[in-house]
Image 1 (spheres, rainbow, N blue to C red):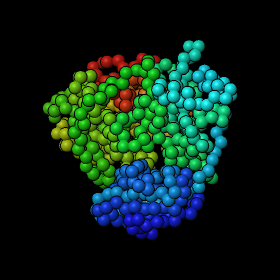
Image 2: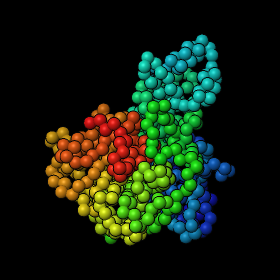
Image 3: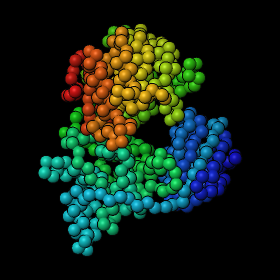
Image 4: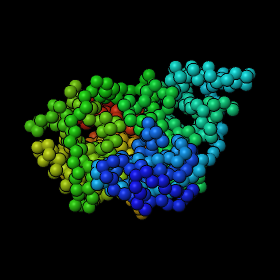
Length: 522
């Protein structure tokens, strides 16, 4: 169904699809949807270059839902008003197509119980039961900032707080990395969840109030958290600081003993010079954005320069601010000059199909992207100075691509690698991961140096998606084979706020002249 600017389109509750498509004429297209405040909408922006926002009736407040990456992008939001509006923005002649597959009317869901461990909350509950209200508590917490940190009998307690949700609150991130439920303190407006954490903890998180409830599979229900998740309004350390809205922002906490992150903080850093282009792959049969970066001291004639390929490029640039970090580390001579290539994953489906272990993707990197980068920077290839870096799927992808193409890539930085992954039918009977077994069976005739990091909170109670132990396992196999492998375990989770420091640690460990960055306990 084509939609003109300003048209009102009905969308039935639950799962009746609605397709909205059109071509921009140089102005934004406004799509008004039937619905009520609190309704949950989900769907996709089909591959294209249009950006999609949900906007307030007077257009004073808007939230980015899809950035127009060129690939398929998920859309999730909860209506902040009756008859919510979508705004589609892009250049004149840009085609767009939005497929909405769900509208769930506003509902409720009860949260589970949780042990009351915080002394401050215990005192507050006593006061509430005596007839007081929570105003004094919130005044104190607002001044102090969240999460609440308390030291009890040699233990550090971290309590996440939210004020005033109607039905429920979920924590996106946090020490469990499991989208935990907060619980209500009595019948007050205080929602909380307390964890015991190490004194070196660093993490980022979001809070999702009144997550919609609907009949659906567990993945769909977990994805619904993204509809309301935003930065904690009482946290004093938002990240990135200059994000366009709280939905594009995280809240952070770095305890006093959290390790230094090389190259950070970035206050006063200039915006780096970046060059982007659309790069077509004959091997993969697709096209993606590639962004190039040179540190200020980079020269094609430098024989010690590092050529860095980094996966999940848009996130590394906009969220983790890796180019600024590279400028600071090279300027201080903590690492040599760097030329970097930031690789866009296109979209979620391409990322899942290409990154974990795809020989065609490895061939694309070695046979198409590497020669193009060498030509762009005007340098000769030196595999010992060429590094693949990534986190999560990008972590295991860096390892598998280097093993597939060792003549091209001699270094790997893997953070929170998804080493639980295995190709279909590649079950292991020795308790080791697919990649660990691959390393055992490999002769590694070409030297590949590794930096492997993972978070202490990246564990699994079910044994599925286990990251910390499978990463440690990989490091142990490499050491047993006499290979160079550096190990860092961070007091954090599956978290780009942790990864930004891990990339600096990895570059220093591999190219910093022997500098030691972690305890490397094995």
